[in-house]
Length: 384
Image (cartoon, rainbow, N blue to C red; front, side):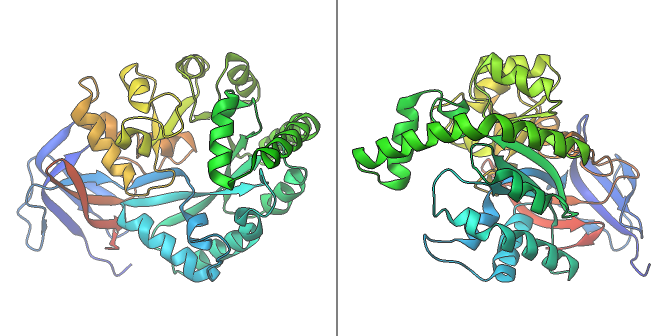
């Protein structure tokens, strides 16, 4: 390759074990890390970090951000490639170099923009990636709403797409998982859809019937077919011991957004990686009244953070955890947004600053406690 060797010097390098002050990292011509020098470097042409942090490229397993770009307002559909590139720009400027775009398969209410845009989102990500239009590396995460009548058929249609690697199972019907509290369910959907009391009663009856008819068979079918294809499986919004036992029996590796301490503790005992939302950390609690990610972190029950609906929250949450929770170091917090998510989906070539790893790297300047992305390298090439 024509790429020359790059030296990043005078950095605060965040490795899995420590922060190396004043160190240097050498990137080879093949886009990998050739050396980490704790003594620094004075090589001619070295990029002087002036004491800024150097962290691995962030790895995002669950973001709904693409859906927002396809439907920026109710009833508005944005052109596919333009929406995908706009989403990608937000992702890479947040320091995320590997992203699993989470796409909802199925729906909880008729007329949802997500389902109408589903195939276009898959096609646009594949086309933009094939044409070299994306700065981050995009893969796909299918979030399967098991109560929807057509979820299995939709899953089968999308499952052969080569970018699909991660599958999670959701059930947003009353009394299930995130909505074990009916009052929480009522508040959420009245706010979302502006139902009258009569409309809400009809909606609840319809959703309860859908759960009874479809959730069990759809869940079993999708688990079997996802495992046959070798996809990583994740649970979603587990609230009770029964939910966790069900996930463990299915061989799920990731517990996404457990809603109670009890569910998180049991998930850990079953060896699942616990994923929580970075916005939950930044805001200091769940927006829907579920368990706080900070509470789980203090209990040692947090492995992975996801930006969910705010890409910039990912790096902010890592620095915030290290600054506010005594038992969590910056390397441990950064691992929650880099190597931990990478390993959870079988990506062993990235996520840490070490010899031989892919040179996905982010320069961070900490200004008054707010980490700001200054530059990003992917595969040794500077992107921003």
